[in-house]
Length: 383
Image (cartoon, rainbow, N blue to C red; front, top):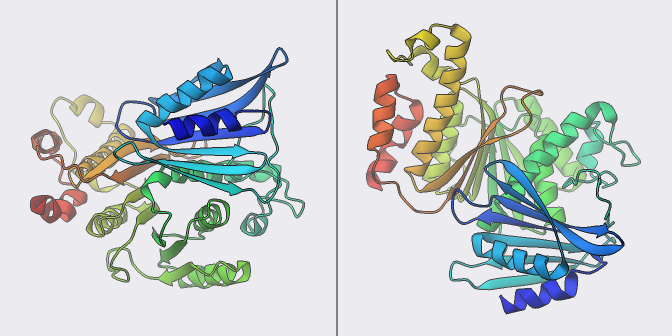
């Protein structure tokens, strides 16, 4: 930690733009921390925004207090990203407390904001020359956000925040392969490729898979036009896909009903390090779920449908944990934009939950047999 302390002493100055600590080692603690500079009564201090239990807590600290807070945060987290006017510094914490520190000069000078009521920080900032955002109609040719497309801009950035959180699980020393099941028009695939490869310097290869051939052809043309050599799109079905032996990260956004389960099964079979899934149209359990105690509320069709959808995703997360993953269920975007706003994020730890009695009792009490249970049954038995 002495090396990191020295870096912080050197970089927490007027050129400091911000930092993010991410990659929690365990559940129930800090999920993420953001640090930014702040001028208070003419003095430079630092605001730490700590995310815990999906809530944000703020502290304004001196330089010395901030250094101690960051060092403490890195005992619970796996990664620290520091941005200054001149440098981008990445700190990765190993399992035995070892730290890897990499420093890279930035191409353009980072703009620094120290106002208390600043505008929200986005991973893809207004003014970035991002070609797919131009074609999507989110940015103007001058790089400004089209106000009518602000929701789309926020959604893309929210998605990239989830990707940012799992960076410690991706190996930066080799090619990382990501498979996007049911990629559709693929604007999030393009966003992820741009962020990981252009902004973060990962050697990433992304494969998009979808059933609509005309969409696949269109996306391949765009990838070629942008010069995205390692972004490819293929026509195919999630359940039948056998094109790769090893995938590092599996993404499944809005795959309908049990298609999400097949995507999760494939991810587990590949022992993917990261899974990001935003399920859609969870109909399967709606026709199965019944419980005497819950009968008074399940008699209302709309309530039953929503309960069944939530139970479906919770059981998916539990079955992933039974296969050696640490799973979280998070809000993808605000409910006001779409009710399909749940994201299942799972990171492979190798720690297997051997006792599945509570899960079995839950499924029995609700009289449900979710597809994910059958698809992962053999895998769980082997573990």
